[in-house]
Figure: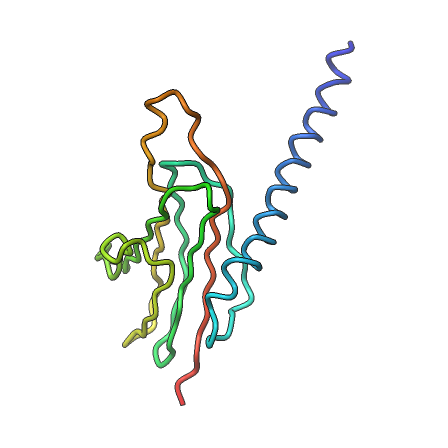
Length: 149
């Protein structure tokens, strides 16, 4: 009977921990990622999640022609490099920051409106082989735009 009382408390604790982590990641996004959109209008969305080394996340977003865009991706300082790729509907890689020394911003303009897929991956530092736990932390993605004049 005592176990039945513990389960709801444990579930509440886990739910509260997840919400706390989300709130911390949103604050991280505002503090670390938003300034990298300087000169662009933020689209108002905060995309952030806790990721661990080797983990990958995907995000789909529609972009419109006749606009300049900036995507900014920032990870917690304890994480290794954050790799991101941008793919079109045919899975063609339009951009990867791996070739650009893991740059955390990319400015671009599209000839036609389309939905793109962003794949974000926390690279592996190799510390797991020495018995260390993989690093984890917030990774934030934000978008800014400029209207064509």
